[in-house]
Figure 1 (tube, one colour):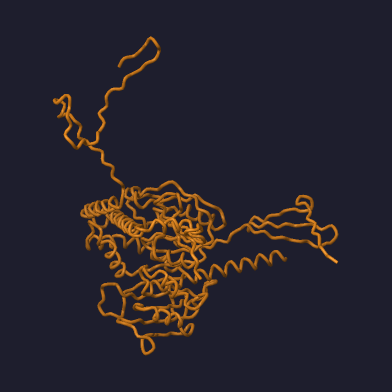
Figure 2: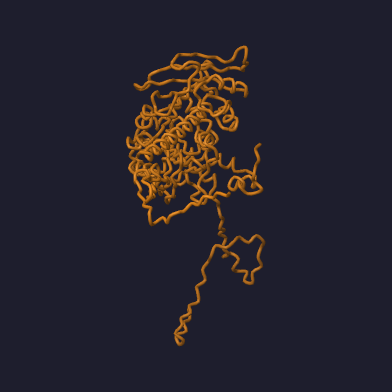
Length: 125
Length: 396
């Protein structure tokens, strides 16, 4: 807001930007109690893209396909919509299998990548 | 008296000259001996023979059981490329690389929705790129292959694929394009009948939220016209077809647990000798359960006969029923001939190694394992042949 023109430097103090703050759980004692109502209640939640994402996609695509096909069951759109359902179902089942298989021993995982290390050598005779 | 021989090596650049023949990437070194007229040739081959196998399968891409069994026969577990795109469809092991043909989609999921085509439609696939890259890999050149991300439905940045010893292309259209078909050394088609497909898809999708019996049925029905028009005709070009049908041993069975599997093997394919039961070219019906072997219900039934399939001479080996115990498996193996095993019991050993895979107790697992051994045999014969051909060319 203030510019120091004399020194040739322009320092602009940044305007206050309201950033979504982390929710404060305990009641906060404010010095200005009339500002209680204006506290920001937005919460940023980080959602990991997981298998839940694909399941949602499958569900959505099935609904879409049903809607598209309600109009015309033999149209190209209908067929393409069901093909999408099939593709997503396959992806979902692969993700499920991977998740099931992924619950493994960290040593096993390391050894499958580095079988020549001392910890992982196996003698089969 | 000590005798020692002194070998004098002449400088490489003075009396040696190199020629390279571009076709097979071999380097011949000729050393000219001024005293004698003999020419010494040393052969250095820097080429690697790559064989290409095509596998036509619906909704399976590198992660399917068949692929895992196949790569296991060659040794080593196939894994996605390290450090690359986590959604890559490629599997790499020491000897084998499995490429998913979905990576050659020219239209991504949104493009297909727009154009109203399914993934089965050839318009959604770039066959020119497929042909070029398979040709390049076969001749030993690494390629940057696109990645189709099944999760997002988009085409991701390409990944580098090094030419392997055995390249398997798996997907919906390995034999669709004629040029790609000519590059294949061996091709397999996995033909699942409609009833079995329905039963399997129910098993797979009923756990998904949103799916119901009707939606699964509608999905299969909607894809059927495109499937019959584009994918099914590839059957006639395959060297081996594995047909999965509902069992005939249990009347009115609709669970699809017991399967009747037929291995249809084309006759006259180079380096491929079909498996047979007792006597090649005859018709045999065999129920191994009896006095020597006791099986539980519904038992096992084998059939072997010569037949004609799309105007080709074929031999069909069929198995109906399930294996319950190890000794049933080894008993059956000991009576089959031309299995291309390296030792007695190899088929049983491979089946046991992956006893947790689906199909390990019926014909699907058995025939997939046998086809894997046949491919190994084909590979070794091809290599041996090329080596002798090269040796003869060098002598000439």
